[in-house]
Structures are given as structure tokens and as C-alpha cells.
Amino acid sequence: MTQRKLGRGVAIVGAGMSKFGAFPDKTSRDLFVEAFKEMRASIDKGFDPEIIETLYLGNYSSDLFEKQGHTAPIMADAVGLTPRPATRVEDACASGGVALRLGVLAVASGMYDVVLVGGVERMTKLPTAEVTDTLGSAGDTLYETPAGFTFPGFYAAMATAYMHRYGMTPEHLMSVAIKNHANGALNPKAQFGVSIPDWMEQRVQAALKKGKPAPTWKSISDFLHDDAANPMIAYPLRLFDCSPITDGAACLLLVAAERAREFTDQPIHIIGVGQASDAALHYRADLTTLRAARVAVQDAYAMAGVTARDIRIAEVHDCFTIAEVIATEDMEFFAPGTGFKMAQEGVTARDGAKPINTSGGLKSKGHPVGASGVAQTIEIWKQMRGEAGARQVKGDIPLALTHNVGGTGQTAVVHIYERKG
Amino acid sequence: MTEIAFTTAAFNQFLAEHKLMASRCVECGALALPPRAICVACHGDRLEWVEMVGKGKLAAFTWIYVGPTFMNAEGFSRTNPYCTGIVELDEGVKISARLLGVDPKNPGAIKIGTPMTVEFLERGAGEEKRTFLAFRAE
Ligand SMILES: [Zn+2]
Image (cartoon, rainbow over all chains, first blue to last red; front, top):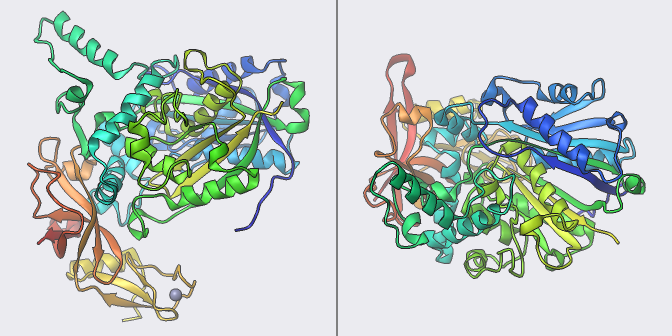
């Protein structure tokens, strides 16, 4: 493996995101402006947007979701950045993470000192069947789509292979959803910022209010096995195993590390980056791991000079509950075939030894695909600076990681963050 | 048969003739299914078509309850799900395909490793006619 290094240090000095959710009256532009304004307000020592030199924007499919192509210059113009270069990045659900990587490379190359990285997706305007088609097109439309595969279907198939090999059950997956909703309940930006017990209580109250018979679930497990409340989407994955369809945007300001103190006394440094690609699912030797994620993280660890043990918290790409289980193994936090036990035993909970997805993850926070990779970094930024409020992890967080995946793992991108001093 | 280009159109034409065809690298012998025009094992571009016997084992599966528009048009729905998955052929390569001979009332009953045999599904008529790859559980 080639040991790669950045040409110079890169730091994050500002971060902001829109509320995630379903907003019939907000276009991508509105969401991006909302994220940009929060990013601008987050810069401790203030800054003049005039010094931004270029934009990298993660966006999967504004073309199909809202019939608007050529999204990067539109977003750049909306926040007053033209005539600066504006580049859209499309790597499916990893678009945001790859936009961040390109921003890091642009600063590390010495070409730019100040780079805006963004991500945006407006998904809820399209009917669900067409959203299913659009997300499915991140797979191989020539050889996978004709078999009837959907996006949840790909991960469901990985889940059946994993269950067979390691003895996991659908109930183990439910523990991931329960944890991420508990975290998301403490995140004011989350789309479904409510714990599953509170969700159940809301359903009971709603039924009573309408004068209908109230559901009689005896436990969370009872609720999660209810075909009406938690319908099957792609066996063995039910609704609560799947991230939602979301509108949202996120922004980061990257600067050359040597200039970081002009903006804040608490910059977050990016010390490791890794990205990899892979073929369609049926070409892969092992269906229970994402090779691209393993290659990406090995590159990132090597560049940063750290190991999985050193990472205090991580935001991983939980588009589906099974994806979080596999991610925690691919990032080398846990041995292959043990990730689901760690989730069930609370190791990945906010107060566990390896907190995963303290933001609520894509599952509860929402998954506006092109923005998700950028929004993961915002959670890391907040946690490392001690600004995560009610969901703040206890103790020092010197090192953290984000893992963002496109499609079924045809793209994976990993970043490692350090809080210096 | 080496004169037929290694394209999706050729693969689909073979399906219409009820043949499941892979590509094999003349340089290193690596087999590829779906077929490839360039060998990813050695980067060679001298390939040949080889027909698969059509027997294999189930490697992964799912039942789709919320399908894409073209499957919904075939009559599948939340109350009429379909099964799809990945089959590993005896020749050692894998392919995505629709799965038949499985019970929608008991979605967890089918087991990874179940022996599977190829079938060719004809859908549509006239210009719209198309052959889809499927495997039936034995
Ligand atoms: Zn070869």
C-alpha cells in the first residue's frame, strides 16, 4: 500500500446545517442558504465570505429529484460566490464525503487557502416510487436493476448473507435503530428526533385523539414486530431499519491549517483521508463487508498514523441498520461478525466504549443523500468542540472518524479528525 | 464466438436465446459474469464467450415489499412481494437474478446455500418483449 500524505495541513473552522426533514416549500437553494448562514455564524472570530476561493458541492441527483441540473453554480450564486469555481460532486450517497475530500485536497495542494464544502439534496418532492427508482439507479442499472433490486433490497441481501454466516437475527438490527433514535431525540436538527418509546406513545395518543382503538404494544420489540406500525420494506429490513427520505443541506469552511487561528481558537484538523471504489455487489467475493470501506479506512489510518483503537467516536453511514453493523467492523472497531453483538450490548451507545452516530445517524437525523457526508462531519465538529448539548459525549475527544458510503459500497470515503491543543 | 462484442446487448440477446453467457479471459483464464470487455484480473482484452451450465447455490436474497415502478407494473406490491437475490454458480461466479419457487408467506424460510437452477422469464410482447434472468430453488 502506498503511503499517501497531504501537502499541508487542513482545518475546519466553521460548520452549519439546515434543519433536516420534509419541507414542501423549501427548494435546494433555500436549504443551502440556511446551512451557509449557520456555518457563517459558527466562525468564532467572524469572517468575510469574500475570502472563499472555491466551492465543492455534494449532490446526488437534483436532476431527478427536482428537475434541476448544474447545481453547483446555482448554490454558489445563492450565497454570493460567483465567479469563483463551483464544482458538483456525484458519488451517490457518498457525494458529500467525496466533496469534502476534494476540498481537503484543494487546500492541501496549496492552490487554495479557503474552501467552502457543501452538500444538498431535496428528495421529498418526488413520489416515493420514483424516489425508489432514483436511489436504485446508484446500483448497476444494466445487471442489478432487471433482477428487481431496490436500494433497501441490496442491503437486505447483505443482511441475509451476514445473518447466515454469523447468526445475527433481525432483532439485533433493531437495537441499532433504538440506539440511533435515542441519540436523534437529543438532536434538534434531526428529521425523526424522537426515541422509539416516545414514538410509540405519540401513536397511542394520536389514535385516542381520533377516537380509534389505541395500539396495545407491550414492549419496543412488540412495536418493532408489528407489520402495521413497522412494515417490511425488503426482508429482513423493516421501515425502522431504513433511513428516511429527507430534504437538507450542510456546509463546512476549510482553511489551510497555518491560517486556522485567524478564524477560531478551536479548529478541527483533518489528518487522514481515504477513498476507494468497488464493483457491483454480485462481483464481490464477500457480501458481509464493504471492501471499498476497508481500503479507504486503511489509507486514512496510515496517513493519520493512528489505529481504530485511537478513535474515540465515529459517525458511520447507517443508511440501513445492517450498514452500521458492517461499518463498525469495516472501520476495524470490532472483529468481523461481532458488530451486531456490540450494538446489542451498548458498546456503541452514547455512553458506551465506542459511541457510534451520536447525531442519530442517517436513520434518525435523516438522509438527504448529497448532504449526509458533510453533515456527519458537523456532528464530529460539535462533539470535538464540546458543543453537542444534551448528546455531548463525556470526556475528551482527541480523535474521531467519519465513514460515508455511496450505493452498495461502490464508493467509500473516510476522514479522520484531530483536535490539537 | 469471439466475434460477438462483450456488451450488455449481446448478453441480453443470449438471454433471449435462453443462454446464460459469461466472458473468459484468453490471457489468464479469469471468468466474469456479468461479462466484461476488459479482464479485471490481468487487464487483458482478448476474451471469449462461455455458456454457464445454470446450476448454483443461493448466496443472498431479499423479499421486496416496496418495489421500483417497473416491478409494480408487473403487479407486485406490499401485499404481493417478490424475491430477488444473488446466486453463486458452480463455475464460481455470481449474478443478480429474480428467485422463483420460494414462499412469500414465509419469507425467512429460504436458506442461503439452497441449490438453484436457471430459468428464463419472458415479459412483454412485440417490441417490448424482454427476457429476464431467474433461478428456481430446487
Ligand atoms: Zn485476464
